[in-house]
Length: 77
Image (cartoon, rainbow, N blue to C red; front, side):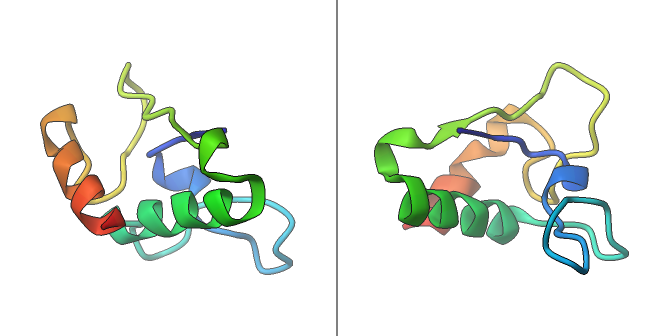
């Protein structure tokens, strides 16, 4: 499962069934929480990073460019 870094995919809807943007911009910790959830549910072998850096997204705060990926690894530790 490729975890996308776009903020629009990192906030649950009120009913928990879908994803949408919220007033607060998701951050590195939000992405780490999503990865942790997937690892617990599907297993660590099923987690991938689908950052979507090819354009057109507003990434989570702290993950604006690929050179900031280390902050995600730090958060996962």
